[in-house]
Amino acid sequence: MTDNLQDLLVAAAARWPDAVAVKTPEEKVTYGELDRRADLFAGALSAAGVRRGDRVVLWRPKSADVIAVMQAALRIGAAYVPVDPLAPPDRVRRIVDDAGARVLCAPRAVAAGEPAFHGVACVDLDSRSVGAPTPPAPVRSASGDLAYLLYTSGSRGVPKGVCISHGNALAFIRWFAGELRADRQDVFANHAPFSFDLSVLDIYVAMAAGATVAIVPPDAAYTPKRLVDFLHQENITVWYSVPSVLMLMQGDGELASGPAPKALRAVLFAGEPFPIAYVRELAGWTTARLLNLYGPTETNVCTYRQVRAADLEREVPVPIGEACCGNRVWARRPDGTVARPGEEGELVVDGPTVFQGYWGRAKQEGPYATGDRVRVCDDGSFDYLGRGDDVVKIRGNRIDLGDVATALHSHPGVADVAVVAVGDGLERRLVAFVVRRPETAFGQISLRRHLAGRVPPYLIPQDLRFVPELPRTARGKIATGTLRARAAEKEGTHGYAP
Image (cartoon, rainbow, N blue to C red):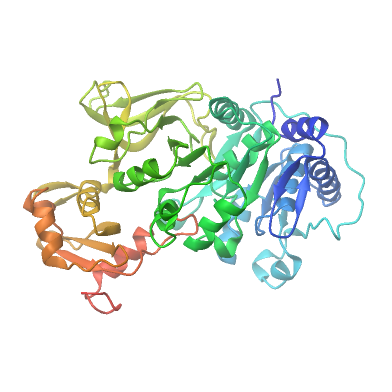
């Protein structure tokens, strides 16, 4: 069995050379062709000076070529560093500097116009124009060798590089390929940016099975009706995204108004809590497996739960489930003891998917404390309660922002919601941003009455604002920093609906 990610493509190309590996609006690329491009790009990277142990930053829109460059870097024994193609140059420069990158793969016209990148080699890799450099001798990477860096937001805006080894990634890929029983007939929808850990499943589980990755066009990524059309037209069998994307598809995209695609057999969601009303709607629309996957970037997926009938009876999100991928997972109470059923604690993970540490910092040793709060269920699974920093105190009352959001989501007319706390001392208050479902017309009085029947008065936001949509990051998550800034400003200055 392989110890490294590059062997997945080599094996797929040998077994299924004519099977479609990657499909985009511009082209269909077979495994044989993807393998050839990886060799081509490995030669170009080698000619640019990339050697074993180096880092290669990728700042390009998603494509088959970018996947081939990832494989090319691995074939040299280097690690790749995917960056959001919409990231501003200053952030990319900080990542390039922090990673000590040997090469920046980006459109030459873009990088050449940015003085920030002068001094780092820029390679514009394109299968149509790169020429035919001689492929270098492949390097055999070990399980513990660095495969890729995923940069996440760090404190004070300084990005942190999460180091993922070949073994870390393969532990997840092998587990999920088996859990899903992935095969050549599958078509995986790739919605997440390559810089987001959700994309690891799309790319590599498909590669392990000889299946197809259908890349969602960037201009359709947050256009609900186009996403729904994509699901049907591409005969997607496995969909994986953050819940907010599915919520858009179910709302403005009217996903559940028509029949479910016959090909669809698994809908996966991760990255944030999925309001139960939307899960119920999905369960009533499709017979596909609904899987809730959980894990921070530092652990990839470490727990999972297939949605059960009993889960749909609850008023809170589906549990994040039990340990997977060979990991051991538990909830640690503040006194350091292990939480028992009914008790709360911080989720801790130990096992093969736990990252090696942050680039340039101390190596991760032992179990990883996620910072996420959970409650242990009677069956040993876990309910996600929120981040440790989602707990605030207002006038002496301890308030979990997730509790407030769940109560707001229980209103039948609420499509989406986010809750933040702003102000200090006696001026500290809860501000809720609420998106109404289409063709609904309710106001603050109705919503406050609904909340009064479900939560104590101190959990009802002092400031309710109806907005057409919530701001989101490039990864599709709610941009809470933007909302906090808006909440601190006087209501009405941004055209909020009454």
